Length: 257
Ligand code: PGA
Image (cartoon, rainbow, N blue to C red; front, side, top):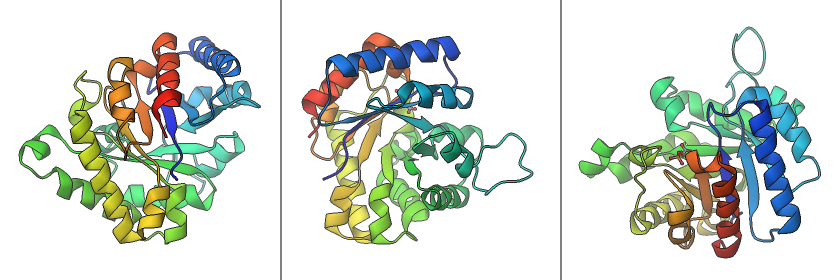
């Protein structure tokens, strides 16, 4: 069975004190309300990774980096390597968020390298895929997602795939307040799982966590998390406010199975 996950992606938000307060609130909540069914993870900006790892030691919380370099180490000013993330105690890394693809020009070939580098270092990548509104309107969304999955994952052996978490994040739903309907999200998640089965097999595809992202909030999380192929959420805006993040953890634990 796939791991169920409630993940907060803070993007370029929160200072050290604000980040610490959010992590402490999540720790306190999880101590008072232990979760059995989900993993709770947070992705702070790079300057907070060490602090977050420390605050999350011996807690139910894991730390995710928002990005990493495809290269091992060396003269790459401004980059952070997989071995540095491991050194900092980070366990997971987001790869190919649409903001990295669209704003920073990260292409399929680079993201494939990053995925392999992450696995080489024992990091769990959260590999993001998603279509634009134009692609959806033109009916090209399935083909586009298939191409992104194929480009990123086709060279992995079947036994490596369950170490990769997929996040389906339709670009038109990210930070817009607009969410995919439960049916639209489920339809795409089922499509992704079917595609994973063609790269590996059905048993392996069932082991892969497929998260939904795009304006997830307490008001819509129950419906989305209740879909059979949705294994949790990658949550931006609603994850940087303590109340809504704790509410999302509660909903995840109630609903995700
Ligand atoms: P959002 O962001 O929840 O603010 O739409 C999700 C994401 O980009 O991961």
